[in-house]
Image 1 (cartoon, rainbow, N blue to C red):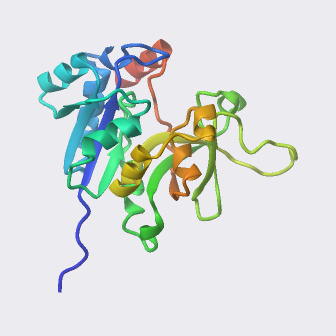
Image 2: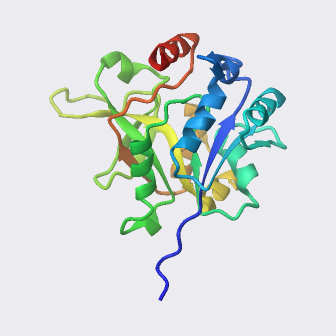
Length: 248
C-alpha cells in the first residue's frame, strides 16, 4: 500500500526592477553579488525545493539570473503584485505548493521555512489555503511604522486581518497584547494562488496595499507560523548598508 504522495514544492522569487521606494534595489551590489542573485542562491541552498525560479518583468534581472546559472521566467503581462506575477508563471506547471520568496530578502532562515512547510503535513492541513510567517514586535517605533505590516490571528493561528496600522488598537493599555509583524514569505496551495489571480481586488486590499488581504476578503484560510528570526528586507539604501555589514 502506497503512503501519501509527496507534495511537489517550488520556490518563486518575484522580482520587479522598478520598486517604488528604492528603484533598482535588486540589482544593487551586496558584497560582490547582486541582491537578487544572493536571494536566489539562498533559496536553492535550503534544499527544500524541487525547483527555484526568479520571475521578472525586467530584462536586466532576467540576464543577471541567466548569467548566474539560475532559472528565470520572464513575465508576459504587467502585474500589480508578486502573487499575480507568480500565478502567471505557475499556471501551467504541475506543482502542489508554491513558496513566494521575496526578492529583497537575501537572508532566508532555513528553520522558519521548514516550519512554514510543515503545516501542510500536519493534521487538518487540508483546510489551509496558504501559510505565512509572523514575528513579535517589541519597539513602539517598529509597531507604528507603516512599512511593517501587522497581523492579528485567532487562537488557531489563522490570520484575522493584516494592516499597516498598529492592530489591535490599545484602548485598554493594561491588556497583555503582543504585536506581530507579517514576514512576506508565503507557501500557497496552487489552487488558492490561481483563485487569487482570477479574482478582482476588493476595497480593503486597495486601501491598505497589502495583497494577502485579498485572500481574507474571499474567505481563504491563512495559517500564520511564528518565528523569532527578524527578516532583513531591503526597502531602502540604509537597509542595503545593514545587509552589507551583516554579510561581512
